[in-house]
Image (cartoon, rainbow, N blue to C red):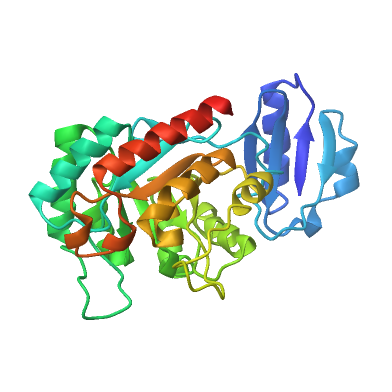
Length: 332
């Protein structure tokens, strides 16, 4: 249920209403927009007298929300959420590009890639330290050593770092990570999501391989229910019957998610296609679709990459993509 407060109502009257609503055993989420304030009621609202609430002088409108995701719902929070990742803002017109290798392989590799993607216009550095791989025999990442190398690249370039977490027990190692990524395989790892809800660090939540948009938003709800509202949604393609590409990039997810939710939406064209030559057209299409950012894999020597070399761009190719994205955004 949400209650829209009339414009110009004094703050003390709003606080009195919130105090009364909390006596009805519901949590109240306050969203202050440019023109009005929206009170989102979370929990068992059956005891709240909807007609009484509607007739209060300070209340403009009351409505029930049928969708199971409440905190992530745009009806609860009409204004776009802007997530601040150590000074880099994402959402509501703030466009960010996350770039870097699939996995951190060495100091020389990550420093070289970091410097080159920053020069091309990237705003955040990505790199995998813990790598979930389909085969147990594939490279699993440098783990804590990889995180240390990412921090070194951050000091060298000033770029905030993004890396994936696989286990809640690893959280102490992620203290200096600016944006924690939840990968597609862990999108419905609910115990991990609950733990991430208890921290106050931005989360990049990737869509699962075969997950609906509703399921993605419900996973975001798990994190938000714990109090962490700094979430960025990521469309990275879904598994379909198509075999020419690694996945099928669902660009319709961008405007649909932005209609359903106030959370920023970024697109990962690298994992979506799995083919480096398709990254540029998919990145341009994502920008045109209204995405709040891109996540692109870049390696200084893709042919020798220990992970996902086939979908990685060279720094020169990445610079070309950035030029194209800039032109698309100028048109928009």
